Image (cartoon, rainbow, N blue to C red):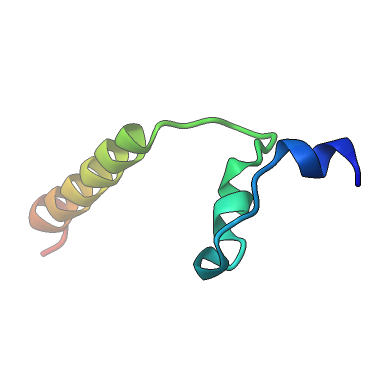
Length: 56
């Protein structure tokens, strides 16, 4: 048995491997979820304001 298998505990059957997927660190841009929510709200408000003021 390899050392990696001894160190990691078995995954629960109900998770179907999803838990292991989120444990792995991926490369790329790291953005906090709060920032994305605020950015989405700003875009929505900007879109509504543009429709009110610029579209007749």
